[in-house]
Length: 245
Image 1 (cartoon, one colour):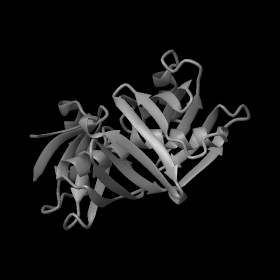
Image 2: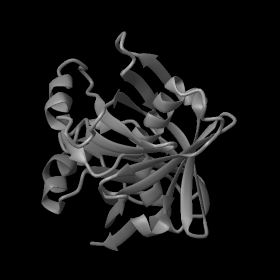
Image 3: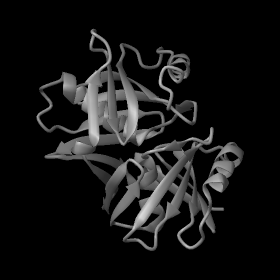
Image 4: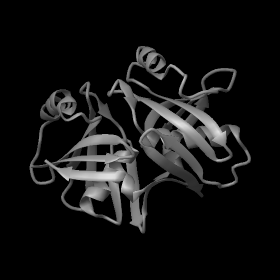
């Protein structure tokens, strides 16, 4: 069973290739709760399937819970396997990974997403693109108490909730921070968080007209855009790293 440490925009993973050896659910949870802190990574990615044409990834967090989707994880998997055009299945649905030149992207159908306003002020929206997120529009993303608010909201949402704070820097450019459920802490980046942030921004800003949004996190930059019914999450290849254990 091959094991790697992978990352994309600072979001880090322990990746286990289980395509040729089955691992039971309890074993996966045991590894997540015991090994992720040891390696200093955010999540566990279990790679399954019979080949590159039927890839499926399971995602387990530090607390043993299972997540539905992971944008940065899909980038890390496609980078690990050297795939330029592939489909990756996850609990939350399929994503299409494409790579060329200096950038790589994942694409997801917008029909798999949902959005609704949480309060009357319009500064908080619930958005789900693969994973459930609360998106807060804030004046100063770095002064906003993400850890306290993210921790408190876990008891409000029984299955956990990812919490994002975003601040507009200039037109089509935002700073973003993410508190991830399961990790129960802030991570350097979150792919589904950036996708969800794009949907929130498009919900309140009718002037986008198909423009790409740049989302800057502590770990790097995501570019998110919409092409018809498809949302695209793009990163620089240099922001993806893989090493074998």
